[in-house]
Amino acid sequence: MKKKLISGLLASAVLLGAASAAYAETEYNDMFEYSNFFAENVNGTIGGEWDVDYFKSYGCGVMYLDSTDILGEVNLYVYNSERTRIGIYDTYGDDETVSLVCGTYYFRVTGFNGSTYILDWR
Ligand SMILES: [Ca+2]
Ligand SMILES: [Ca+2]
Ligand SMILES: [Ca+2]
Image (cartoon, rainbow, N blue to C red; front, side, top):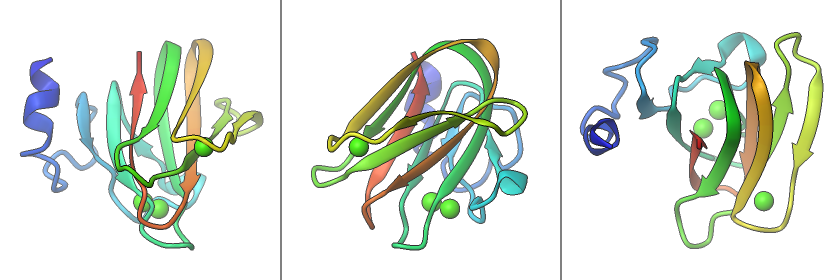
């Protein structure tokens, strides 16, 4: 997909705040109030033991969280639009998936320090 090809070039906050298809997370995003909105997918990093990343998106189908580095381990917490937690996906593996009906969701990503990941509607 062309948007994915250009995403690396544009990853440095050029698309901050825009409802574009692919971009990198923007810290600070450690609370619901600072969730990064994304339409299709987003790249992120667990920047330290303290780091959690909140995202907001509208969509349906399979939400896929995949660590993109060899030692990465990331976990996914899913919340509805009312910020009520509806799922925890915390396996000891480098990816997590959840099937969701169409709606607005918040996603909270945690993981090992240094893990990089992509959060992607599929
Ligand atoms: Ca982060
Ligand atoms: Ca964060
Ligand atoms: Ca995991």
